[in-house]
Length: 280
Image (cartoon, rainbow, N blue to C red):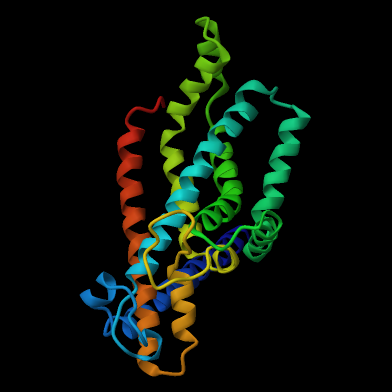
């Protein structure tokens, strides 16, 4: 009976794994099959020209640069805010602190809030202060979106650090700040994971930037100018009734996938390098 039960659940795990892997390869195949024919150097090195969305010449360089600006700026800002929050929760507050539990619960709730809500909230702030759609507004709104991801990921990694390490550092007469720096060094590999998750979410989100960053065919040169993003470029091109423009949308999707893939490879390389300095 036990062997039959074990085989049954093993079969379920294998089937679940095959479904997940099959779905992944199905998505990749569709993107590559429909987008590789339209992907060329002109598309990734030029901004849209007149009539680009009705099949004329141009590219998506504005969307690539805009996405990198928004996702990079939001990830950096979220990182600067997350590190003090996580260190305070795990170093300065007692282990069973109600404030720490409340903070974790709050970030869990924010983690599940749909991105369209963050976009509407950012738009409400813009209206209140009389701001216009801009790169800065997009960065701030996406920061609010990725901040819970960054905090909760870093928090869970930090909680895996053995408490004996804290005791050992305290026994040497270290202050809480010095202990926090030791912990930060230990969780450095996990920071890469948090950064990657946040950057990927920022690169792929469309609802936040639709209301706040706007859209433009030009590359922004200041924080006050609107910025295009790859998800919106894909959306606008897929909405076109022209087949050639729809094929360009799949090519833009392929570009976005390649960027995320390169970031994943880079994160693994950095993770392996930083793990060498981690205390086992």
